[in-house]
Length: 353
Ligand code: COI
Image 1 (cartoon, protein in one colour):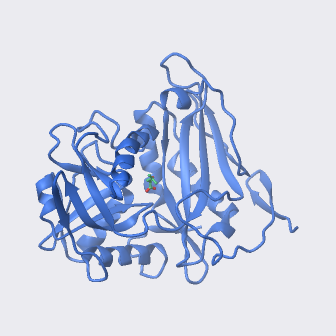
Image 2 (cartoon, protein in one colour; image 1 turned 90 degrees about the vertical axis):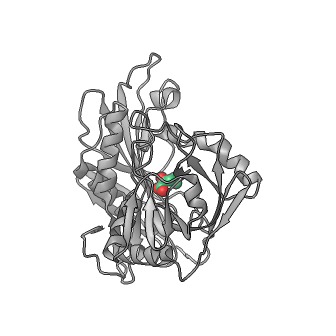
């Protein structure tokens, strides 16, 4: 067995067996593959995060009374590391994830790492796991930063201790093909308006979609499109991603009003579309409108840009064009091109690890 040593600040960690990975043998999807290292940083309530370290990837131990387990005080992020054709590794707008984590932490009464601490920790985690960044076209390394209240409390008070973790896994597509979405009329993803938590990546926003997704999948749908909780008339978000509608070459997406996650892919696609000369509107979109669209697509770190082939609302099923000639494919190619260093990054979105 070959042992390598990696030096980061004061950390010296031994890397295990660094045998090359045969990416053609790996059946990657979107499920966890254990990698070599994870990053851990702890902080007491009232303090600031200061020093974290890389440790071998593995289980963590926390009190059954940990506030994250009992009251859901936790937020996460998702970003990816991309391998370029010449073997470099790039991150895409990691400071945006850091900023969004900070906003979420404020909302849930948690301390958060600074932008610089977040980005440095992501880079360290990727470097320590760099053999797990798949070659171009074989996948990407999905990075999951998590900030949780790990201190114990029984009363409804913010946790006395917090843990910031970063772990990662190689992935390919979240969805294997175009989506056939069911418009969900019974359950909502988030409270409409600015008072709820739909606009942050709170862990509590995700399990509540399971019932709707499970029912939809049992009926042959691939995912669920949620409506606003105030009127039940306007589209908001798909369970794991933002949604866009194209009509007569005008691109529209629901405005982020506090209920909708301000996706970094969403924001980047808006900028790319504007640069390509398209009109883009962030506005209220009724469910009737999506049913008469020319094209529908979803965006997110996990889903990237995923075309939608149909949307079903009650008894009505609308079908949309998908494939090489679509607007969403043009946007997807440009985005992935920038992320993987194949298209010039004129906006300084990529960061070399
Ligand atoms: C992401 O796209 O990174 C997310 O966090 C969504 C998650 C459900 C996979």
